[in-house]
Image 1 (cartoon, helix red, strand yellow):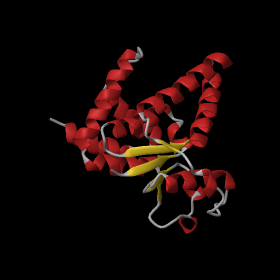
Image 2 (cartoon, one colour):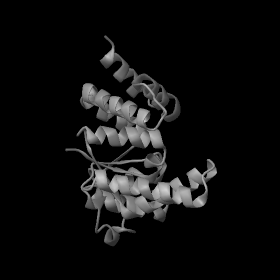
Image 3 (cartoon, one colour):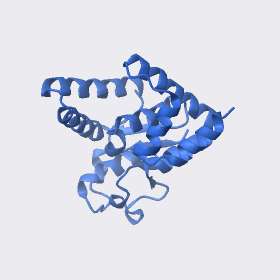
Image 4 (tube, rainbow, N blue to C red):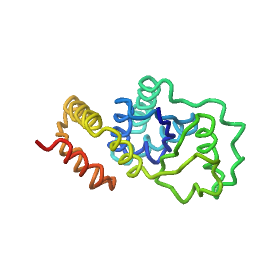
Length: 194
C-alpha cells in the first residue's frame, strides 16, 4: 500500500483532514506522521478554536481529543526513530527537517504538503516526492473513484451526528471551493452520476 506523510498544514484544515483520512480509512493509502507533526497540529488546532470563540481550556481539550482520535484510529501511522536523521537534508527551513526524516523512516513515497517550496527536490532522497493536497487527493481518488465516493458518504453520515448534516455533494462543493480540489470533485461527480 502506498504510504504518504501528511504534513501539519494538510491536517490543520478540518474538512481536508477528514477527507484525506477517510480515503485512508477506505484503504486507498496509508498515512503517516511524526510526534512533532501531531504536537504542531495540537497547538495550531487549539489556536484555531480559540480564534473561533472557544475558551482556551475547551479549545485545548478539543485539540487533544483530535490527536487522541487520530492516534487511536490510525494506530500504525506514528513514525518513531526519525530524530537521528533530522538536520540531514539541507532544507531551506531547518524546522521542516523532521518532516523529511519521518517520511524516510516511515518509507513514504510522498510528503503531502501545501508548502511545496519548502521541500526542494534537490534536498530530498531519491524516491520521495512532494505533492500538494489537491494533487495527492486526485491521484488517490483516481485509484478507485467508487471507493473514494464511499469515503465522502461516510463524511456526510458523520456530519449528521455533529448536527450539521451535509450531503456528499455539499462536501464535494466544499472541497472544490475551499481546498482547490476541483478535479477531485469533478471526477467523483462523474463517477456517481446516474
